[in-house]
Image 1 (spheres, rainbow, N blue to C red):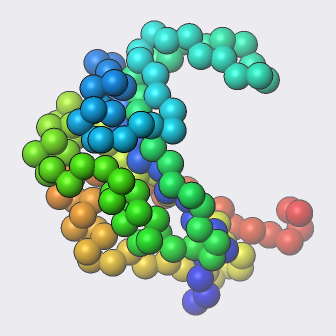
Image 2: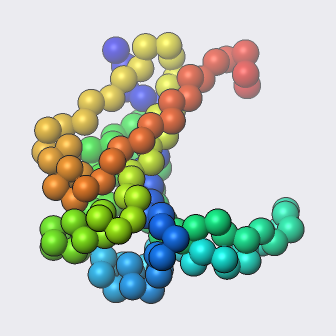
Image 3: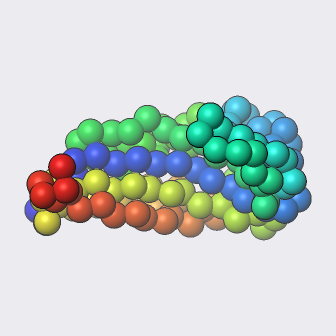
Length: 139
């Protein structure tokens, strides 16, 4: 089994009552993207859309070759270490770590260490995966 071509990791908090300023203050960092429920958001390529729920998004740099343990360690090191704050946030909002796994062959793999799992679990953070299988015919 070879290493993944690339990994991505993004911490995401969602909730109808989520106030991005409160979450930023509690976690000690500014998000990569945030919105309150009902905010109108537009990008250059689309019309304004109304946010269906509040969100606070915090991205790490992509890793190539993949290294989720390093990405998660780096991400968590930039945020509060106070587990009471994390438990409070996890009780009020959906908290997850969204990971993209990009394979360069059909049998690439990645392991997540017990310490990394403990760090996520003690904060009430679920881990979600999107797995992309690179196919030379797709390029």
